[in-house]
Length: 409
Ligand SMILES: [Fe+2]
Ligand SMILES: [Fe+2]
Image 1 (cartoon, rainbow, N blue to C red):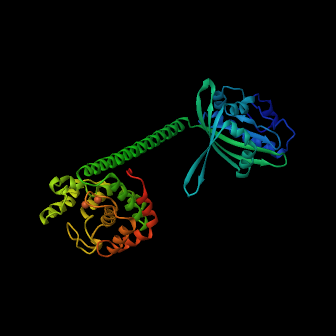
Image 2: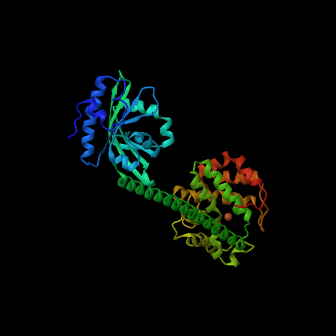
């Protein structure tokens, strides 16, 4: 039976590797340490999975030392009791501290690598001294290069007269738990990467689709040019006029972009109109005019049946760009706000550009004359609000009018 109630008994023991019992320290400190040593020895000999230790440090003195080291820790580190503290420090790879953070109930993990830990040792000691406790998890490279995780829980007692702090702690191996946590983190990280990659691919695909849609629309508009007597410049300028008016009346940028790209499709239905009508040099008979009006329906038919926003706007424009504000237009005689906004905008811009463009049967009208004609159509042919926006933005309209042809949309 080992007796611990005498200093001498303990000092004679070979496994005491501390400094305090031998040093010039106060009786209360030595008594307290001796009592703790007794309990920690007993705990160690029980074969408990908990590894008890007593660390100590002195104010103003760098480094710390162990007053007691559980045997299991010595085995893990493969070192002698005297060098346990240094060996533990040298084996340390990272230290993790879990602490509660706002919002309440959330726990964050602070990971400090070995180098940073050494640099902040003084602050750490101050923190532990203030809290009176320490709770951390260490990753160590133990004997035979084995990576292990130890959870450290300690209470800290301060002896101001001696300038000594005692850390009465226990270590427990949590390698399996931490490996599981690492695996989980890796899984999360892989999932995150996967998601980023998927999002990127999705964006690429969306961009390709958008590009393909615009390309198809541009080619369809080009096909219309071959049938009709219009030019690429008409189609391109009309797009720009539409976008200018759209912006002036506060159409959202993404919608205005759709308007810009959909406008060239307004006459796509002319693909289905007979050459004898489409290319007739003289006036159309009432029957021929009726057949000509069908280009709105044919265009809408061509562009319908798809969920794409671009094609939906294009369909509205194709169907309603010959409707008039006062209800005298075609094909359905819609009036005022019954006519979708893109159709109303396209109607105004189509007429303005047709007036200012040369045709086989007419000269191009001068800018001012065409503007007067649009103004005359305010509230009859055209939405008055759009005519106002058109007139207010004449400098921008004139800039498009003056651009060299052909333009590309
Ligand atoms: Fe038309
Ligand atoms: Fe047109």
